[in-house]
Length: 452
Image (cartoon, rainbow, N blue to C red; front, top):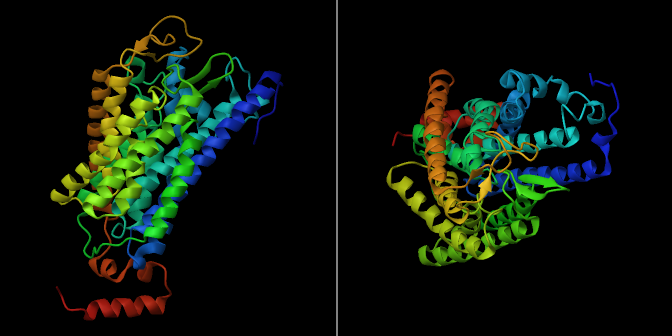
């Protein structure tokens, strides 16, 4: 039941509502991005697995979001409770912001701004984060398409959304997060989304093994639609990764000075740079998908520096992104890891972008919070460094890999990770989404099929 008490007019001022609309707009962008990933994946799987892919991916997103809703925002918000010296910061943050907590069950105008400043905006930012948890689960599922059990995918998504995303974000995302407060720089979640998803995807694909039946499949028009949707979504959610303050201007999530105009310019510059390199690689390798995926790789390579770099610097870094994507894809193929999409698009460009941010933004003040003037969380008391960017890459990749191995091992030994080889050959749509007669026919056909 929603709590109603004293009325605080500051919580519902016109300026606060304008801020709210800004983050609502960005949250819708994340949802559009999730839809784009579903469409892109559908264009790259065999037609006999399209329905299963769409349903599994969608439900993974829902499960990841629902899991984050329970305590995820409270875990991430611990960093700010610590920064402001709230007693028992860990338990208090979770108590305030979990699904049944007072800050999520009280109208903003009835929350004291001294305790919960900008309550409306904080509540809406929770949905922005929740949507990113869904996006992460959807992205990781892509490493197991056409062979992963739905039950395993949903169990994995619950862990990713409910614990993985908020815990990693507590360490590396937000101006008071542990590494950020010591000089790490991020903006669009390069560490907590792209490097996290890319590393988890490598472990998942390696543990699942190669697909039994994997012929090249590409619905190019559908891929074009998916990529176009994603390009439309990216500017919408990217700008939400920062603080919009009427008295301070626009700051990146790491609390570094930035500008909304230059940030938006940088997004489209990255599309251009990635698109040019992707086009060259597409013609060189005779793979048309690279012309489209290169644009995304150029974007990913710049996700940590959109709020730092000049447009010419963004352009240079984005040119490298598609080459990093192809390098990782080739390496994984040689190692026998069946993940031609997620890890190549995130790990290679992501590592390049993380290190580039340390070079481009080296020495720039960052960390802390506006109102804090002294101490270890003082406003912009820290400085961006290449060394800390490297530490961030190693920490996230190594920590995520260990967590993924443990979680996936438990899932594999309980409910199992992979569908049967017969289901895989016949196609998951036939076995999972048809009536009983059709399933019986498919099973009889599988039994009569000679062994390879």
